[in-house]
Amino acid sequence: MVKCIGILTSGGDAPGMNAAIRAVTRTCLNNGIEIYGVRLGYKGLHDGEFIKFDSHSTRNIINIGGTFLKSARFPEFKDVKVREEAIEQMKKVGIEALVVIGGDGSYNGALKLTEMGVNCIGIPGTIDNDIPDTDFTVGFDTALNTIVDALDKLRDTSSSHQRCTILEVMGRRCGDLALYAGLACGAEMIITSETGFDEEEVIQTLKKSKAGDKKHAIVVITEHITDVHELAKRVETATGFETRANVLGHMQRGGRPSAQDRVLASRMGVHAVELLMEGKGGLCMSKVKGEIVGLPIEEVLSHKRQINEAIYEDVLTLR
Ligand code: ADP
Ligand code: F6P
Image (cartoon, rainbow, N blue to C red; front, top):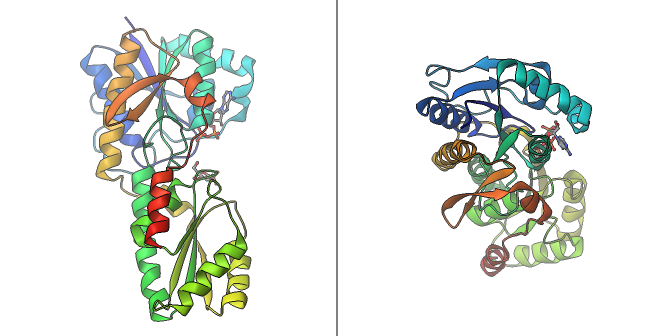
């Protein structure tokens, strides 16, 4: 059975990563397995930045945002020679297998390492919820609650001034943060790359809204779709709605992890180690209908994440 495991966090940080590190560490130690924390993602793996963990190492982190192991983007890891050098570093301290907490880029690295003989298990750590075949990723729920807080505040001022407020949220190419936050906050419109952006439709919807009883409006839009400040100017001219745009930015990535994220991260951490103990690799943890399961990374990465159509239908009904 595996005797020594490493754990790293990679890509964009996400609240709940620390809870996952804690769960992996405790599960290892409780099963007599040595555990090393790897600082700075794949960069630290390559540079041999290893910290031997004991039962004190992960105390008092379950409630802290970010990742205490630090994260990094390290494109050099795509190079097979760099990965071979990382494996040499792991051999020096005896790390035989890895738990990788990150998004789809990090999963690619984990898959390649597994193919090179180092069993890896992925845990989906990203606020974007953009990993296929899992209901939720670690960090999504906390980021969603941050956006909901921001939208509630924006609603106060938007309503006082009878304005239209446009809020741009993160998600890369995934509209889940915009979709769930828009539904939770009663937004007039949600614009995501999956549901499409039609400026004329936005203008017509807002005109209709202004002509009705409601004298303010909220629009939530995923990043990378359009320049929201320019959009606000055009909306104001076309609808007569005084309009302000806000970009929420990196504050969505920080903060105390929600209870949901801590539970998800902790459960995935336990099961990731159990899979490594069974000699498995190349799998990633997913939440499917409430169950935590291990699915092949290759299969998961070959799927396209779909927006939840049923939720979008409900948004349209409630408009
Ligand atoms: P995320 O994991 O959040 O999607 P990135 O896409 O930035 O974030 O990927 C994180 C890291 O994973 C990269 O900086 C790189 O070290 C590693 N990585 C990404 N793609 C690959 C790949 N095709 N092969 C090996 N490593 C990769
Ligand atoms: O993947 C998480 C994420 O926060 C995305 O939502 C966003 O597009 C990106 O990372 C921002 O990356 P960076 O931290 O490099 O600016």
